Length: 546
Image (cartoon, rainbow, N blue to C red; front, side, top):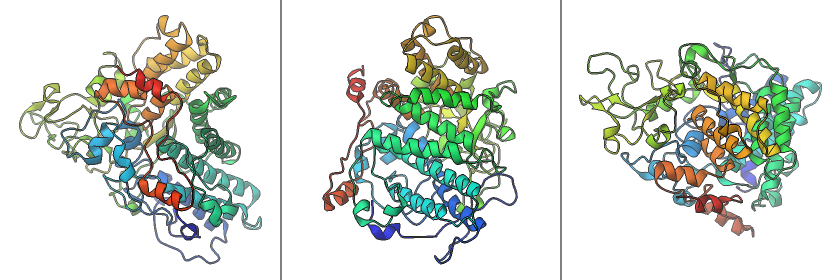
């Protein structure tokens, strides 16, 4: 955490709604000098929308407090790189150019201690600087809370502070799952308090869990039910965020599993349902023609007109990082391949582990988002026989190339009804530690049915342990490359085991170590900031590796 001066009021970036669409498509358009801003309802709204910046999909962002940063949903440095690449989902990237791309794919976090404070890039996956952005959000929160009622009505103030606290809670949520518990500034009165800013020791896990819960609960209570702009956070998305958090931390927090079940009951009458249209609904679910369908509770709304610049809005560049460098636009007969509109990729930095792929049942329709062979522009077909030479793993095609650009308009899903169903089933069984109810089994079977599978077997529902094992398998196939995998594996305490099974190597750490400069800075303040963190049970996970 930096010294006092970096937390002072900096009004560097504002976000506005795209004037051409009904989507919530933030754009950077200039800077303002601190003065009497904000002073109108529109200005308070724009000021609050700054908190969405880390959750956009432009290459980098800078809101004046943490330097240039990767957003959480940009593949190069966001949740796909942090939670999918070092999990069992991705193969080791041995045919690439090494560095942090290789190390992260090997779940090797030993180099994280050398990450530097400023700048972003393939070799610098430092999200620690986002602590200063949490402080920035706290300052924004205080400003909005103190807005005169003559300018900002009580209801409008509740809605805006609900959005701010949901964004702040999400920042803490992701940082918790990247590094473990971290010190944060949550009281606006402490934003310029030098002593408080220098308090750089890890809090207890329970303490940080409660901070996140408080922000999410506030958002559920106060955020608006609905916004016409697609992609702007609302009450149902706040419920999903809180439900995930309660499920992750319910093992040691009283009543959290019940709260997750309560949230499911609040959501189930909201009109969401699994998307079931088309020959393969799971494949079609993510296509541009089906944006914000009945299953999508929240997504990053991306534009097909984006050009990769910060000012053009959100885009989805996953396929440029998922397609091999020798992929051909056409096959041996001149027919278009799935890569026809884009052509070769950057280097297939992201892939699907062949071992992971083999866990799918042959009839599982979700396998169809994975390409297991392709035609090379060198004049021959690449198959599994070429693994380790032309490529290391199969091609993820979940967000297909639909426009002639590497900057696709495919939305990035943040919350789906399938996740709510599976979370409910898991929460119920974790709460009771007994065999699942009919409702819990039905919830899982709905997801399986959409995938073309039959219901769970009697042995899979015979007891709590068997049912949880079945849920983990369903989650692995349902949410591939949606940024959930490592968090799921740690919750089930199988991160080391399943990653070793898939990659043949064991993760070096459960969570990313903090960079050396942060530890040194804390020491200069007379504080002991522990560099590494692990949850209870991590050594059991390691010892179970075979």
